Length: 224
Image (cartoon, rainbow, N blue to C red):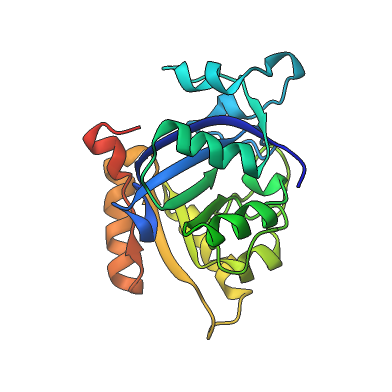
């Protein structure tokens, strides 16, 4: 595979969606043109060649940075070993991880006994192992102008939709209407920034629709 541009690597608990509470190795990739206004990782948007650095520099950082290092699958697994990570679930996030072809990395991860998960906006083709769990957080009418892909929605194991108001649920309804109703993935609503109005709306809608609620557990308990 072509080398990945890696913004961050750390071990923690997954705080969202179906794998909430699962020990995980997070690999945050650099680059995202989608432009979500509420994004909490805007430092990953731009890929500046001047920002390239070494894995050691990245692993020593304690604050968000737009710096990144280049890595292939072998060097990433070697880094996991060097850090002494014990989690067996890998989360590929960003940025927008599906800007990259992740097929070889995810296949090798499964061969080594890991499970893998990708968190994507659904605006890029998803190139990954068939066994990778795909979390699509639909990004609709964002400033980057990217459209949701039907093939990304069809590949999703779960749709985790950030909401702040009723129009966000209406947008999700429109997306779901275009899908095979007999093959819908798990549906999670996630209140943006844990706002009370958004949380109340998410709870009400989840009960009405028999959907699921996703809260950012890691933010409640102070995890990265």
